[in-house]
Length: 553
Ligand SMILES: Cc1cc2nc3c(=O)[nH]c(=O)nc-3n(C[C@H](O)[C@H](O)[C@H](O)COP(=O)(O)OP(=O)(O)OC[C@H]3O[C@@H](n4cnc5c(N)ncnc54)[C@H](O)[C@@H]3O)c2cc1C
Image (tube, rainbow, N blue to C red; front, side, top):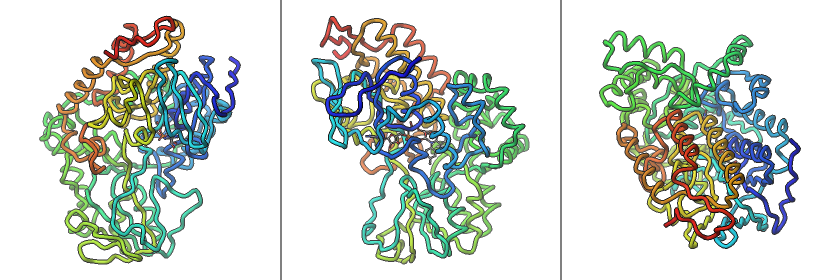
């Protein structure tokens, strides 16, 4: 199909769809929109495609879901032709893949880089959105798709004196494009979530001394990363149809793995230990799939948590350091479990020190040092591995106003409210990819992205066929969905952790469990059923009956 020509991004240009963000979600959305013959403009604040993989260039950055699965499935040619070099590809390779996709599907001509979407305002007369961008343009679109990413708003910690520090300060989520060499330097890493855990072993090899400031010890499973052989790639390629089907339709987390048939306490100690050992040896996130009740039953969860704590004690030679590294504040898996390469072993190096800032909080940063517990740790460079204002952070930074001038930030002041994670009542024709209330970050996110983008594309096509010009989630359907999301979450152990799933890492953020925990496969069925029932819970308005959206009452 010929690619429709969009108008250039000049003042008063008008599009069928404006997409915000050119990560994996925005790129695939654009591809689908073109297939529908719709005009689209993608705005991306970065200078290139790739989103997460464009921004997170810190040492050791790589995916934690195997690359043969953490990749697009929408094009069989693409998945057959692309060669992943390692089991978990490093960031530069994933970014290269994103660029390859942009070129292969000729996406760049409709993406405007270095441009933020600042404001989006719904006009109730015309049923169109007015979008204001950072370059001063105003464009209109019938639909807006927020493909802004769940982990794209890097969180700067509020530490006294940070601005006075004389050395270099890096945030893992905003890493410079040129290589950073820490050779001979004294480096501090603040934060021991996934980015800290990936970067510590690599920085430790360069730095003259590395001081790691840990508030919360996290569970981490060895990646067992290795080069992929041609045989392994061929195995995946031959089975891709089954693997992708399973990930999309059957799995809970978008990953091809066996479904456990028993609970942890159904096995005797020896059997259980053997199973955990086997998973520890094979490595990766599927450690949590050994048993079917690890997220549900604290006693079951304790068996896995204890196993990992014992492993940490085996690896880390200094008993006091090992004890600090053993997580005790939350059940295993209730914060996104980390996947590492030699993280715990890094603390056996003579040039690595662990500082517990739970009991000795950072008091301030001086010109040359991090001061914690009354002691100055002198450093030349600071690495802030302090994570993200997750799931809602990038959406909140856009001034979005819907029906009656209500802003999305006002509506979400007590926590995000959506129907299916896809739309929020009062904001017609505004879609969110992997929004709060959908499996998103509890899954292989590319699987969830593809599902949402396909659902949105099918929905737009349906609306066009029906002559509808506006669509909106009903308040009633949204309330029921929010209650359902909460009910499922609180039946698990997840809310027990102070996690970014709960917004707990951002001071003042409402404590709401944001993602949908019911599983990728079941969630997809719900979305498909909603569509099959004529988009149940959504109101659609035809061109001949403007301004009457029954759903918003
Ligand atoms: C270090 C790291 C490792 C990860 N590893 C994995 C993994 O192994 N497996 C997994 O499933 N997930 C992983 N994730 C999650 C990852 O974010 C998703 O897998 C996926 O890349 C998200 O794609 P996206 O397009 O939805 O969002 P993003 O990749 O975040 O892209 C969103 C884009 O929107 C842009 N944007 C935001 N607001 C605006 C605005 N107002 N105007 C213009 N542009 C805007 C941003 O600049 C960004 O480029 C990881 C995340 C991080 C941070």
